[in-house]
Length: 64
Image 1: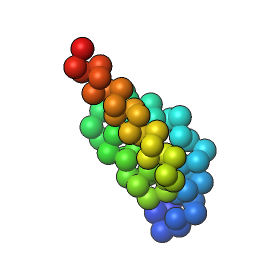
Image 2: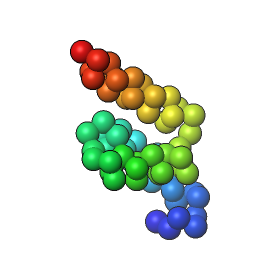
Image 3: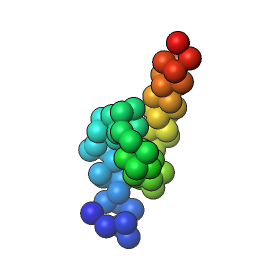
């Protein structure tokens, strides 16, 4: 996969949505940054909605 090929990035995101979600939920700052960069460059609307739900879960867990 190269950053120069948007189709490859989109394919990677489509095939690894669960992994990216786990990276966002449980990864360190660097892992979260990579996951967000991949989603920003290869994600679809549904992916961003899933990310928002994960952020909401994290926020709610922090408030408890």
